Length: 269
Length: 298
Image (cartoon, rainbow over all chains, first blue to last red; front, side, top):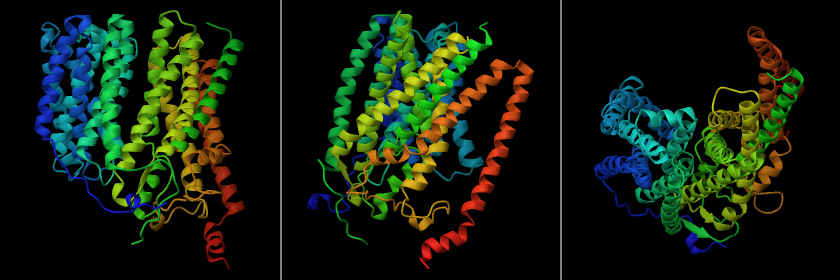
């Protein structure tokens, strides 16, 4: 019953780190392009799905970087900040740029980064949380949250201007966006928390939670844009299948997998 | 505006739906070891206690239930707009939510246990296969009832909030009640069944949860069986009372009196709780002497 594979042995999995800057660059560029593409025509609404996946990737990497400092039960709270800290930025941007709609995502991103910076500085210097990456990560997380909200709005309603935002808030879908977005960003690190957590596996899960959000956004978009929403659902389902399989495969490679069996004996220290 | 009798009937129906939702929610979180007791399950392998217990870390219960309820409500609302039968729309909405519940639960178990490799904790495939269906089923029941009570509030009482928003708010509420009421029964009583209850937990015992069952190894489904005796129903009654009393006072009394009655209900509950606690301490306490008797064996 206690095969060699299930003995307690510290086997740290070799870490191949992906640079935070690369992820941030991808997390800004791809969602911005995706949001514009999704609002171009409702047939392209699924492009907003790509934006959702990459915004989630960026946000989840931010949560991972800051929560690595031993924030256990605080992981969900940090993820919630992503959306909570950026809702106001999105609404303000939609008001400020109501004449030049194309500027909304850029202004929303800038405002969200600023609000994240403010939250980060408060956490670092007022609450005295002694985490060096706090300011950078809070800034990144809020930026990702703003892009995620706009990606969802663009995918679901086919536009990201003030009427689009009003549509989602009047119907209550805005809370649906809030909670699936927040869970999408906080779940990857929260679900992989532990001593042998590895960036690659967590990010694969963030791709999977991003794709799951695409399916949900596609379902919600059926009400607003009708049948083209099916393209989003199909795209999301395909992306989810691929990314979820990648995550499961990686977890099985990195964990000790047993079909069934009793609890193995461990050497007591 | 409807007459008070019909209104009372609907409020009673909401209370009944809330009671079932609360009970199902708590049992579901116990099968998954979500929320507060999760920290002990997460800690166990680090202190050398390996286990076959499910580790479902999907945020806390309130955000998790807001997540399932708003997914279910969105799907149901879209179907209702497409002229679907309402009960069928609820069932399909709750089904879609339970699928996503299962997906997130499976990733949490695999991810967290894979991250405990150095302690030798295995990922048991049969634990995934056996636990996901009950988790999804209890989640389905809870979400379905949340949709029902949100719909009554939205459609019959013409609440100004949109349907999805009401479901979101009730989702957060049921999660918060489950987390504060039911978790004690699972966390303190079941996970530490071999320790005297009510004495608080010594820090040295952190993570040393019970992993053996009456026969064989304890699984999280045994925990649902145990918690169904007290923790689940207690959670259900709590949530049912909150929904019933809160809507009853606004239905029966006009605006100002409803606020006064709300304060009176809270005051009565505080007094009743205080009396209950004093009675319990007198009947079963004082704790230090009980502890000495239980631990010293003399």
